[in-house]
Image 1 (cartoon, rainbow, N blue to C red):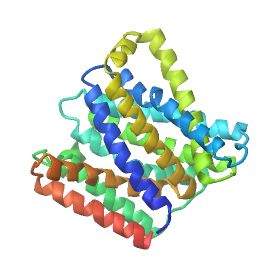
Image 2: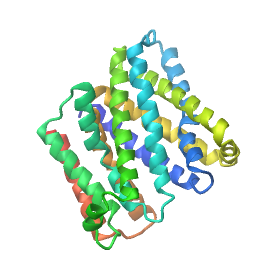
Image 3: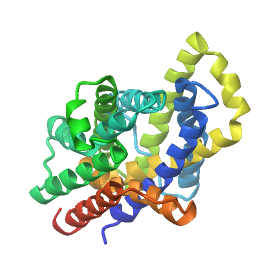
Length: 301
């Protein structure tokens, strides 16, 4: 098994925990605050990991360059935008359609990878991405009466456009992070990913922190009040990002994100085995499609 596979699985699991924490925080603070916690509380974690790598004697850290910055800054800003849009969907009574479209991230990452990095994915990987994305979208609209019809007819609805925008931003950020990490050229993929993560989180904390000081100072008090959950979200977010960055240093971003759709299976495992809740037939079908897409990816991608 190639090492990027278990790393991606770990990233998906941690992202599932972070998303649950952020959804909980949305009730205690605004969208901006719930978006900021993953960066503000994640940066100290990333710095500790980097310090540990330096102390382990892996050698000097890679030199930063203008090319590195040209990848990191757009990626950091795109991730802020994607996270903001995704959390903003929780404000709508029916955010299922928007969430479904946000899950087109792997397909959009494949397109942006081709545009920005000149990377192509294999026919097997394209099939796997299509199957898994369709499965995730089916799960997202499982409880809508019309299902796929609602998804198609609402393509120009506000929720759908916000979801597509979120997926686009995440797709761009994934490709940018791969470009940034690769541009460092060594000494190893873990160090490259960690340096990229620290640089990214630093940009995000400065940008969002400045915005909150200017326009939404009250969010700091709300974050402090919910610091325990915020810290949990930040730690899980930093761990997930480190896994994503590491995997995308080794493999095409679209392929990594396609395998990362397994996050939905983790969610349903918790729902069924921990909370003892039943899932709808469409959700079962969606889970089977995601599983099928992952198997196609692993064996034919």
